[in-house]
Length: 359
Image 1: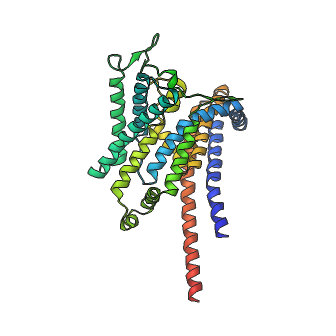
Image 2 (image 1 turned 90 degrees about the vertical axis):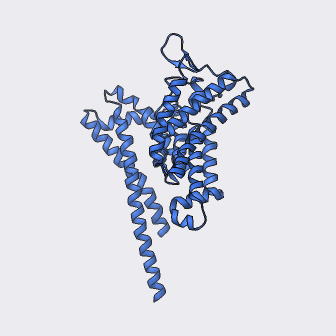
Image 3 (image 1 turned 180 degrees about the horizontal axis):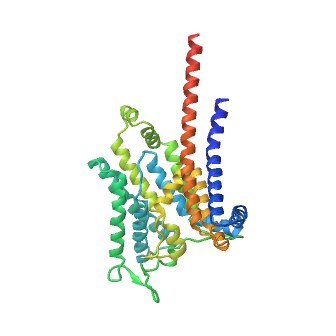
């Protein structure tokens, strides 16, 4: 019965958060003068259309990679706010290298992915080393590194250096990657699925395996639960901090590949930005579990895609942003309440067991 009660509590948390988010969305829609039931029903119907679902999955792939990158740091209580700078700098470097070589398709794609991974790894490792060697707060250092990465890209992307002015526009881009460096789409009856969905699955599987089936993963989880106990057991916190930040950055370096290899085939001023906080939010929604992060990324992308229906109803799409924020806050509050209830139950069970033993 205690196990069933605990499972029920864990299930109640996301259900309560979803219901609260829907209630807030309905209230906001009512204030905006729209019919909440009709508008939400239309948004749901549009979102469940097969073509829309394929678009949602494609949109969710970089969200998922960003979420896994954030989740890696969360396990050691390190908040990697620098995902945005890491993946943009990695995508820029990968675009430059990818456009400058001619290789068979598998090797070309592998080289581009390896460059993105290494650049993301190295950029995040700087924050890890600053934290270990100089005690610099990871949040502060990663935010500053975001600014450095943005400035570095802007300087290198100028037409006088590595960039090119796109004909007929003001967009400055890197040279185009040859077709051997493009990722093939996966055809489905509802549309083309970005081929890097396979990469997302591999990253999620690798993340789960390392965390749950290796000594390094055990050390990370132990250090995250109790740094003092882990240190007494001989686990070295500085080493883990650097490795964790570097691993988070390496995964973050892959975030831009779905866009780079599957759509634009070049890096430009219009390359997507701002995925860092999306990744952090998705990791929170998914409770740092690879399957949970996948659900969180899908929900996030589903809400953004379904928001197009709001325009037809004459309602601002920013309501979706409110809904996303409410979902995150609701999840945090709900799981904190569940944690406190379970802690009280555990103390009660221990007290009962002690009393039974004494009797």
